[in-house]
Image (cartoon, helix red, strand yellow):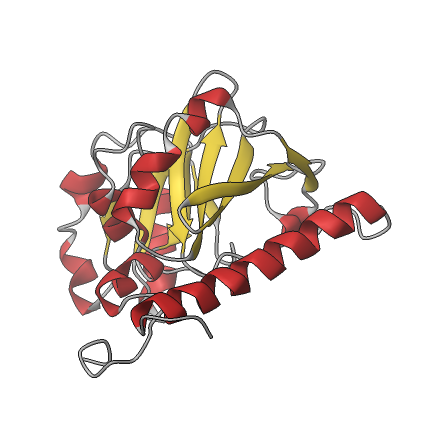
Length: 229
């Protein structure tokens, strides 16, 4: 492996699956102090016609959010209202051999909290609120963004993620359904978005995340080689 050959990897290879499979992420973090969103993962290969997936969705609550198992910047998200929708979406996914995950829909008021973690500490919290008529809080569907203080409930949980994910930089996303938080996903290369490019204070905070992220990469490389760069 590259690490064994002395190369510095900000994203260790043994964590690679966490950036490519949502259910792998939630299984790895199953003992998270903030519970993961319940998730069913279904492959869509050529054996789909045998209906072997039916027991997996037998108790799936509807409506359900349907997503590609691999990160796709929220592309390909759909809603399933019954088992006919499940079958239809799996049939479409089969054309691209795309594995899907199914999760309970938490409602249109669901808010997303993205915590930018730098050197094992929470750096900045970005809040995403669904845009008008949108089913989920994503920038591509008109979400409203703003920076906010880290909620106390999440502040008490971030040390867990720092221990489990020894990376200089990553993002942890939580969903709040109006009553409680749920762990949504972890992104080793999570995007750094600017809520308001016209507000100097917001721009300064945005640039601070970028700066501190790459300083953390640099410091990690220095620690590996036993000295400063």
